[in-house]
Image (cartoon, rainbow over the protein chains, first blue to last red):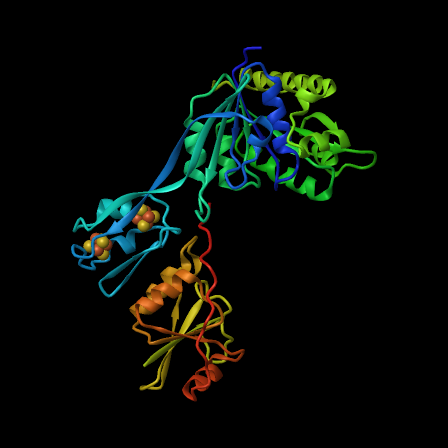
Length: 289
Length: 120
Ligand code: SF4
Ligand code: SF4
């Protein structure tokens, strides 16, 4: 195929088949990179079962004070845009979980009383499995922001075709992955809640000017609120993945459907072709590229 | 001594504000002078770290005690560093709360809630 494209797969809250779709798309491609950006609960490895070939710790700088040098001038406290510092008497209190590691306080302290210390935030892993390059980021328990981990993942070298398994929700972690994508595949369940999540994801990608389409997941007989949403909002429906107990079983056992079932091999191959065609079409018609 | 109570409005009849860091105003009562003043909380609109900023502000006012319903871990750390005692608010107006305080009826605040994740 040889298409150069970065596809972000997203949905609202977790559990809508985002990982299932991502891993199967990556597996069916001849040579692709799968990036698991769900840093709180990465589970792509369960399906891909990669051999880990490398890993490193992602750190974030936090200010540390030398109380002997600090004269309590308060410059840092007043300058911190995030209220991560407080000064009681001559005691500087630093709140790491509030701090955004912007570096300003260390930079402006007139006494040179602050310095930065690297704190571990999480781990980035790189692996291989057949034709798949596997990347995942896992956040250390108790850390509050995974943004630096996602950024580190996005900097990793990858193949021409990249499938990003986005974090759940529509917060700024998702913004980070969507920002790197050429095309967004929204996965939606056939419920009112699913349609609500779809709307949030669709609004985000539209706001960011990214081309997108929806894959209707677990479709059954009857009304599908997500389908109604897509039709009402001019969102292209790229396919439907009907509810299938066999597929659900394969997934809950950690199998790649494309490897176990000929039908799904064909299905995801065709879906991938449709997506890359859309992505190519979008980048062709984008005058900025 | 000076005691502070987060308030909904600048009035002694006001209810205590349920939020500490995002209360619109604080009532400061000076037990010696028997005077009360109301100060705007600049931290109320802060995108994050409101509790820390509010606690810093009250520490700067040299208060001795804070009466509140709820308090975050971070704000509580700032207040303890400044030796400010934290008392549990009753479900009363500001005036009645101060009266209760003067009669020694208020108990100390034992639970703080964990700091919120910052706005990512
Ligand atoms: S700017 Fe430096 S000297 Fe001033 S209070 Fe902060 S750490 Fe202390
Ligand atoms: S690094 Fe930035 S966010 Fe962190 S304490 Fe310093 S000024 Fe505040």
